[in-house]
Length: 301
Image (cartoon, rainbow, N blue to C red; front, top):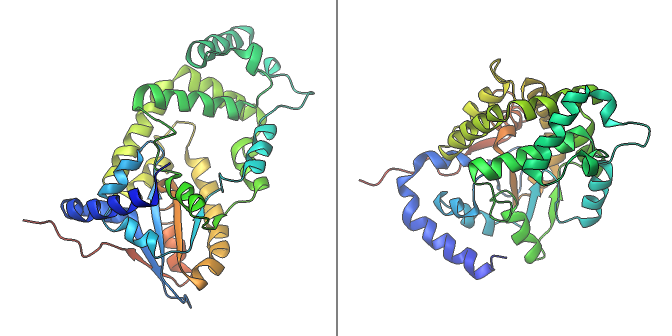
């Protein structure tokens, strides 16, 4: 795990190089107003981006150092909750996955999972389709987009906070997280989605590559439009975006006590933040002043 001394070194390093990267200023946001006693900060993340990328976001470590708590989607350091999630991914005994596919479809899914995951449906048939879909997508990202969970930026600050005995708060509780992961779509639709991802993996890879490139250039609104657009036929599509927008409204309410006291360092996936119904605009609608922290950053000549 990265030490606090390493964070300090990264902070100094980032100040020296990132004046050349003004677009990345759009990934770090300052939140104030609406009765806040102290400023808070919002960092957009992308799980396919490695933690070294944080070096290129101006002042991100400085802002983190001014905070006394980390707020994220789900507190991954809660190991009891993680155990509950794994249990929630298992199908009830009354449901058999094979009943929702033809024999050829079931065999095709089995072979594809066996090739890519090293396990077939003889071992995985008790898992919910949404879980299998995410397992397969993660493997696609590893193979084609060099995704490495251990190097991902997504949970970096959460892990550092835990190392420093700094509070880590999840905006979703365990029940809501289980719903979002495994039950927000009807079971028959989960089955169709799994088959679609198995049949057209290139669509998933292409979409994630586009979103990653947009992220690297600080284009949060474009990410939102990419997900909610009519041409998106991937497993994360317009129906998912509508759920995200509804959840953003709840998140604004849950963020209020943390924003009022201030000193919150909020890390959330960039998919949730941009666009007219993204979290940034909903925070503004609630009366907060939300601006890019490095908005005055200039390119060095």
